[in-house]
Image 1 (spheres, rainbow, N blue to C red):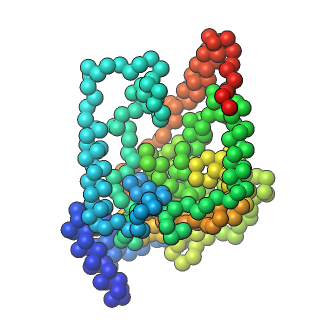
Image 2: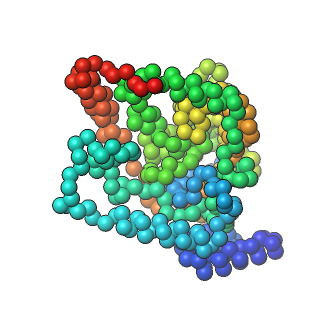
Length: 358
């Protein structure tokens, strides 16, 4: 360990000790400082990435315009303390004598719909600032340097406008294809399964990694999405074959797993962070074991027809001290049937399908 790293580590430990950061964060930095941790390896000598991990965090994907790249220890401690206090308050038992919600809900958006579908018992959005290389980060995006998405190209904006106009000709409950992919239990909302693999800031930000010399499997708890990464010399799929999560090929660069993904499903490219992307989208991911508790995840999104520059991020995955259970989406998916049946019943009551407002 060089002198600069020793000094930096000592400074970080001092800052952590005085700020009230989590004991796990302190253990991570201390293990590196003491040189106690030894990289676990598989039978074929590769770094062992296997196990259960989580990327839940209160650090946003995109940075506020008035912020620098790193929180001070005091800022990070204040944010984590505020999240803990809010969680405790929202986890108080519900009032059994509370007034029932109005018929049809109160008009609010979100999964609960104002009818009490969720309370905070179900929420696990993360309670820690993202610590990457000992720094409490203010955003997961690190490039561009302002921690924000680069501007979109004019062509990308035009594609998004045309897609929006096309969707508006249909009612939102006309058919299953008009419902969000997560509601259909096809893929998770946000970009949980990736790539890039990002937190959804709601729940189920957990992953299981299984590794062999030829393949690496990453299962996301949310909608139990599974990515299969093939190792070795890429044999890309034909351009017209576009599976969910794309066509991923991996190789090792030293102790870092590098994964390159192309051939994304066009349906997947019409949502979330990748909205408006083209067939030329390429995402490169890098996974590196940093210590016993941490898997460093880096990614770069490259599509010059969609963004004016590439954009990259760094996300700490921390060891999950528990099991990942099956995500039983819709408990058999009967909710989709009920949603569409309800829409048909409403149409009959109102005398036919209503033309959507333009």
